[in-house]
Length: 338
Image (cartoon, rainbow, N blue to C red; front, side, top):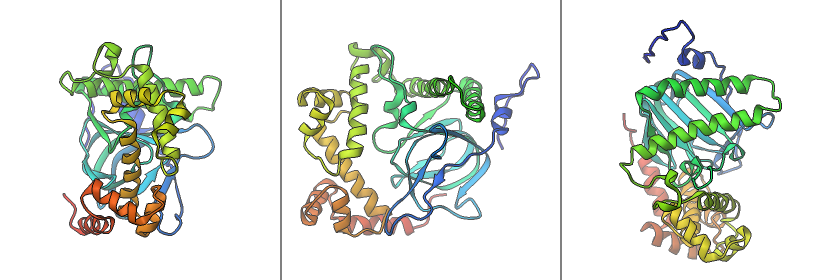
């Protein structure tokens, strides 16, 4: 059971405000095409934002209806966990549920709450258009949503009240009839949540790269981070059709060397490596979570020749696609961790 400090002035606590917020679920795909991975989307009408409250919730094997099949999100997700136990599977990797923590899951990840009980907090779902760029000389917080898997950020106890009050305010704004200020308020409140997450994430990294430090530090500045975000958006759209670095450099109107240098500054990897990694990530997801044949997976990942795909996949993973699928599905059939 979650315990919240009682406010000293008789006002409603952030916890009370969150608990009073109605649940507004995203829209799951009713039935995906044969062999495909289901995709959850935000409702077509209204802003690309929703806040879902969790109060002593159970999911997966901890709920009566059992776990959903793994599914993709066509939105970003910020999960605030005040208390609870269990774990997610995110792109097949176990991610423990930690109390007093934020978990950030980028769009396109394959996600499922495999087991969760006593889960209280909130889920904030949002589209790309609500992400703000950083101020001059600073990287925006959206990079926290990039890369493989989730990021889990511990929230300092003294900051919990402020965090929950902001989530509650954001939830209240989603219930108001939209007006000329709605989009800006959504964007700024969400930006505050992500900026706090970035601050706490950096503080936990023991002085390693700090995006706030700008060009004089070892990390990216706002221009590099912005270029990385534009590259990621383009890569999501084009990875299966375009595999050469020149295509991405020309589309982004920068020299290929400048693009690779900026991407290396943000991610530690160059353009070609990121393109290959994205194609292989798609292959991994489809092999593990869909029933498509190896040849169909190769086509979806942008390989015209299944034999070449199998060789490339084996170089990348150390095993053939069929063996990878068989091994991971065998692990999925094994008992889950408690």
